[in-house]
Length: 178
Ligand SMILES: [Zn+2]
Image 1 (cartoon, rainbow, N blue to C red):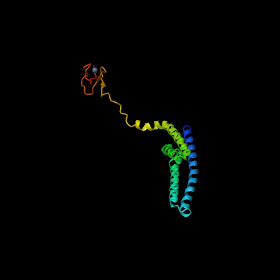
Image 2: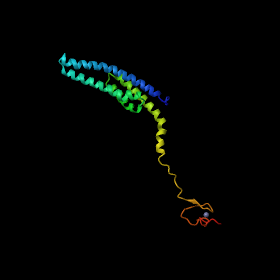
Image 3: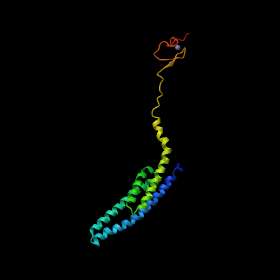
Image 4: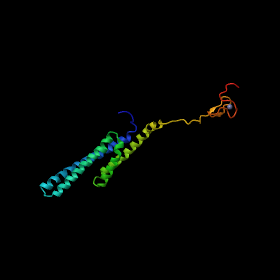
């Protein structure tokens, strides 16, 4: 790993926050998965409640999906330093977990991570702006011509290339003698 150590402070904080949020999500998810797996199994076999099995399966699948989405879109890219990829999904996760109510602590952690990711992005953006501008600035640099005006060899008055005689001193523009 090379360079940019001074701008990674926000990135490090973001990484820690995302890691805690994801770990908490993982713990909660395991609990929910165990519960939903039991509900799915027992709903049909023990309790005679097929609806309970359906709900258990849906909740279990949703929990797994959310866990996978959080890992792929937020946790993994943040760890890799790919803050641009992680920032929007992290915000979405924060909102989702806050809206779910019970998991508001996870939501707050993701929202805090989102803030730090933005700070990290802003810092890296300021540093790389010069690099981004460089190619566009090198595109075209045509120096504006001065209408092709050239100084008269005798009096130095600017004259047009089509002029045969200088309009100021009246001498031929090509004439070498006085
Ligand atoms: Zn002249």
